Image (cartoon, rainbow over the protein chains, first blue to last red):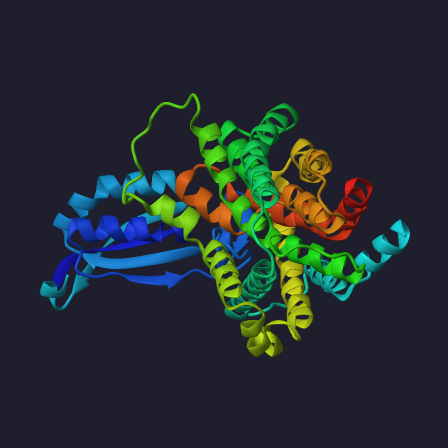
Length: 101
Length: 327
């Protein structure tokens, strides 16, 4: 087994393209985007699809990546979640095929 | 006449379905309209209103008077956020950036309020011009520019948000779904005219009212949900702004309509456009341009307060104002 980092970012949908660009420019080999159904934060509940602009919708981005990519992307990601509504976490994971990440 | 108009507008199926959705949502009913279906309904309605407007436009030439109304519409959209911003800063505790983002919503328009007003006018037998749809499209964008000017005034130039791309805001502002569908359908209606309309009327004309009822049921659910989730973010000043700003904008637009000698129907629509607040085009643009502004404030206000007010009380009132000044 090989050690990698797992990035989990929940961010407002309008910022998804910005997040994607940051990850791609840092050299990430892949990521997956999930729609978030709802949640609680900032002292209020939120729910997907409550307005036509979809500007209150949130998405979750998951990526397994190499530590070198994390180092390259971390400043930009911090800037992104600092400006937009969102949270980011990194954790250690083990993978079978390191060349995929 | 006025009492009849108010009653017939409030008791129309579209308003009653909206109220049903609003009440159901406030009572925490689990009823929902599937998200993709609701988006499909929105596209259908924008296409239908755009095509109808385009067909009507094809029957008349563009006169200097129409260009003058277009200029007035642009000025209204651009100037209203400045007034809204001043009122918000004085009457509410909103930060500069929240006030600017909210002000942008009140300069732009709500196409659903516009559609509801055209239906109320049709019900009252008052004629309107097709080019008013073009005015609606014109008024979507300038307010966004004003909001950006207000938000960035006096602010230190901060760096770009990571991942930003040149032209992304332009695309969001000018190529958002409502502008593309509305303007595109308007041009298609204009080019194909009455003959084109004959072929698609069974889809775009006959079921229109029923589809509008479905859509407004969903809007009621959304407005109620937004209000339930976001009302704590609004202070008394902000809440009263949600009701008073449409009336102030309507009063200004009434004076403009009077000075230009607009017909009753067109005046009612221009007043409605001025009094309405955006909840489709502007929120999306604000998330990109002013991400620090809180969507729970501006969306709750425009969708949860101003939209229900305009749909139930505002539209009959704006028609009455138009009857006073309309030629």
